[in-house]
Image 1 (cartoon, rainbow, N blue to C red):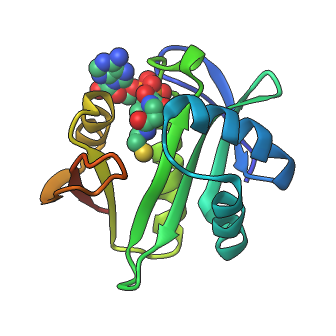
Image 2: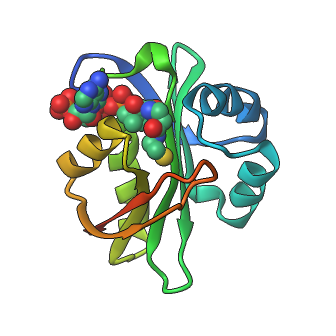
Length: 155
Ligand SMILES: CC(C)(COP(=O)(O)OP(=O)(O)OC[C@H]1O[C@@H](n2cnc3c(N)ncnc32)[C@H](O)[C@@H]1OP(=O)(O)O)[C@@H](O)C(=O)NCCC(=O)NCCS
């Protein structure tokens, strides 16, 4: 699926499927983003649906990723999305989400959903700007007791 795109702020990135050697960079980005995942879980999700795990590369280096999973109802779910902190705010997150939507549309999936921490205003704003709407709240969803806003988008 290798695609080269420019973000709204002029950064050139290559979008491609995750490959196992990318796990080291994915974990570096995930660790600095405090997402609570672990390498074994990411590799398991990759094995379950290799096409649902996308990375963004800049000058040969992975600078962001998005992981999709399928819910038991057959909807898509954004399991995780993160961008290297040095490359945030230049449109990489939006490009990753758009690529994720294309992946879901190709599989004729009707809805995509996700959970976002109440305090994560940046991610919340990103999701709103990409057409997600709030539809629920789960108290104490995260390990540290913070609640999650549930968001959903029609594909
Ligand atoms: C959330 C995250 C993926 C966004 O990625 P990004 O590449 O920085 O986002 P973009 O540059 O594509 O910006 C997209 C939108 O997000 C919002 N946004 C981005 N940075 C922002 C900031 N510093 N303050 C407020 N809103 C911001 C804006 O709405 C922006 O759209 P605009 O530029 O048209 O205004 C990134 O901040 C990140 O990795 N955060 C840590 C991990 C995380 O919280 N993941 C989400 C939970 S799973």
